[in-house]
Amino acid sequence: METTTPHELPRKLSLLDATMINVGSMIGSGIFLVPATIALYLQSSFPVFLVWIVGGIVSLFGALSVAELGVQMPRAGGMYVYLKEAYSPLWGFLYGWAAFAVINTASIAAVAATFATYMGYFFPMGPMGIKVVAISSIVFLTVINCFGVKIGARVQNAFTFTKMGALLLLVGMSFVLSGGSVSNFSPVLPSIPLAGPIVLAMIAVLWSYDGWIEITYVAGEVINPQRNLPRALAIGTAIVILVYLLVSSAVMYVLPMQEAAHSQLVLSDAAVKILGTGGAVFVSLAVVISTFGTNNGFIFASPRIYYAMAKEGLFFSWLANVHPKYETPIPSLIVQAVLACVFILSGTYDQLFTYVVFGSFLFYAMSAGAVFIMRRRPSAATGSYKTWGYPLTPALFIAFSLYLVVSSIIENPIDSLIGAGIILIGVPLYLYWKKP
Image 1 (cartoon, rainbow, N blue to C red):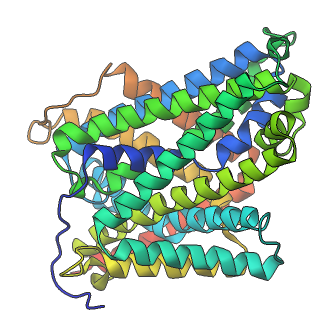
Image 2: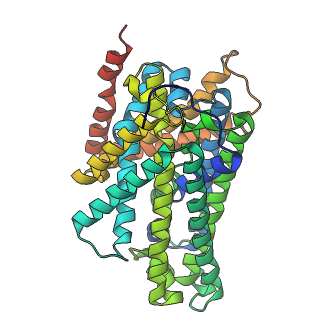
Image 3: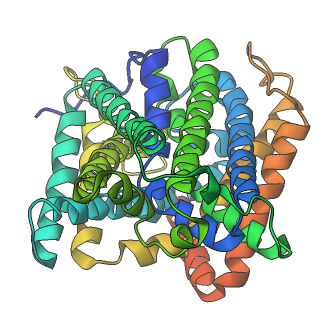
């Protein structure tokens, strides 16, 4: 494919496309596992619902805050653009570097590995077979997204609707078929202090909601971004909150609290209880669909960060190339796929992502903080959308994000130090590309 010429990406993404990118990126493999973690920490149904609701509201606050920045700066790159404009080009570059080097590429590798592992339920394979399937899925989705933004969006829409349909079908069957009981919601209230456990549960919940930022990466391709970007962020996050609450309700209705708390595959165990052995097949297929769709969202959106950096001279210049016919950043898509496949082969993706977990929410907090900074700049404070609940909304999101950063550092100081080192490697690289 010829990949030289135009350095612009066309606006072709509708409100539906933007919303499905957000929903599809948020609903991954977490919802199939996290309900067990929360049950283990909280041991009662009311706090379980509470953390899902609060975690969703916090994520919605983040989305509503960043939406204002997206309306002001509807360009490709998302947080790279916001941090660069609000703080300095260095901060934007450090985020872009971290996203390229680890955050996004390791996430793609991890999701692909989960996809391949669950494919093994239907087609048994050894460790090398899982790596081959994982790499094949990355290559396949990358090729799909090379052939036009609308093709990638259609794939995203199809898989997002399918995964939501599968989860809602499971919810419906949980309440209609025999096997569940209202008594499983007991105890409703906790019998022990929850100050510490509720914080740990909240961390798990916020990781499950992570992914709402993806649509901002492709803001430069959203039609009428002043209208559609904030709507996509708000609607998408609200949809995920509803889906997660329904799934959590179904799990608690089918499984007693103690059983759910000690389950390693909690949705699978719930499905088996109401469907028999077919339940495990159903959930495994749902995970395959969910992770495949999630990775399409990551692969679709993330290269726009590297494209934006390169376009401004802060990365390899050839990554700014856009295909003249398909109007996609093919070089950025390819280099992202290569690095993710290297992580698959090395088996280091989980550890690498652990290193920069604290960094992700540090950048999130800075993005919400950018709303305050940009409001003080009359030249930049334009746009039809303003953050609902300002200044409380972004302030609360910043507080939760910084708490996660501090908690990650306290719990994993060595990993956090290594992660900080990975991010700081970007400083000399920035100076190299920034030189006259």
